[in-house]
Image (tube, rainbow over all chains, first blue to last red; front, side):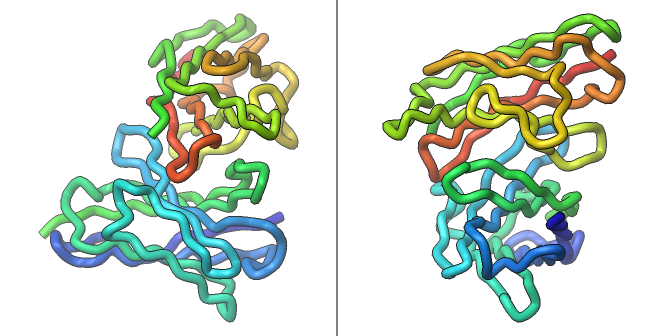
Length: 120
Length: 112
């Protein structure tokens, strides 16, 4: 059973870069047919898909965030990461990492989420 | 982006009674491959979302059979035949036909 766990700073200053890592256990991110995904949820609000990365390193981003987002993989650590640049208070949210089954297009495993606040 | 609209936004149900949530998309979710990419997720309080229904009507592994999904094209419904206490949370529909990005409905809060 694959498990995902987000980690990173809980507080980021405006205009700086938010960096989060998702550690995957119970399966390799470089095997199988899965996309590794980030989704966020502002407090009391709905879900927003940020982007996904494949084992090849190929990425897809939400057009609304594309200019500020970079996803990357570290296969040696079985981790994938999110960088969101030039953050504002609107980027305050719980950030989830998740696994998406390729072709099936479903998020079948999620991390518990981590709250990131943007504040000076 | 495809817009997903859920109704109602909140629902209070007596245990043992049925519940129904509607989800409408502003474009058809029927793909040329014959599949309809509509999903339902449940986010229990203080938890991450979990997949309950995929491709309109298929229950994910371990999901009780009191959950069922139906619909086609742009109109979809999630039904719970007999609500139990553990069903409390926020239900989201999601489309996966036109990506990026995946888009979700606003969520429907189910209370008992």
